[in-house]
Length: 162
Image: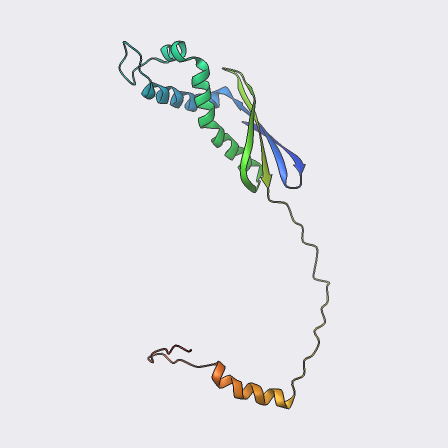
């Protein structure tokens, strides 16, 4: 599988993915099995229909569609992991080319988390103004502290205030 990433804007990318048909083999086999379980053909038991009969009766396109729908999420996830993207939301997928026996090409546009570069902040200096508390403020704090704070020791039941 080959994939390329094209940046559309800082928060959106387009993945172009090319998959050789050999990598679709497992999905194609699974598609035949799934269709085999869903349909009935006179002269064959359910689940025992040969692949060529399915192709003749229902068309190779139905099988390919099922296989591609099954395989797309896997290939999309591999491409995202390979490109190390932080995706947000679901992709908009467009199958650009599907050649039976050759390749599957598709694009996926998806929103990504933007890359944020934090500038060097080690040289920034901050001045904090000194706060002075008057003697009256100290007295108020000492009087209010016992009402606001209470120490509950282990072994004693906690009391609910209010």
